[in-house]
Image (tube, rainbow, N blue to C red):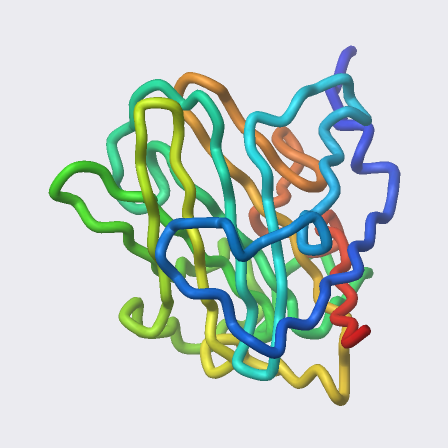
Length: 213
């Protein structure tokens, strides 16, 4: 029987996330992001090729993400978690041995928008979670995008107040993974993907270390 278990499930991954004293301007233009902030691609572990560049940074005001999707011809229907967009999971306690999410685990989604539709962000409940806090007001999530015929660029800010337990001075390690979906290009993820239950099992996520240097 071939269970198709992703190779990345057998490894623990970590990324040293740089500090940004000056927050990036959320305008969909990634000119103020450089290679220091790029999250290493892990798809090649399984022979895959990424179709996007993913960036991450932090400061005391929260977390920042940027994504550049290349040659994404056309956009999918945008209805919360369906269609083209980005999903991000964050555990502010980085509990590596828990198979069910706790109250410090978060699941956010971001849609790039198209035409008259503005980019949007939101938080979703995590299935089978042992405990969950109140979902944040979508209006508190910052998101901006630029869509072209050859792809899109999107910038995101998740404020500290939307991240229960976010305290870099006390704990600078976060559980983290992301999933980028494109109806034509497929799926790009950082750690393991389906058929494993990455969407609700924090032990399958990687680790982000918030560093100041």
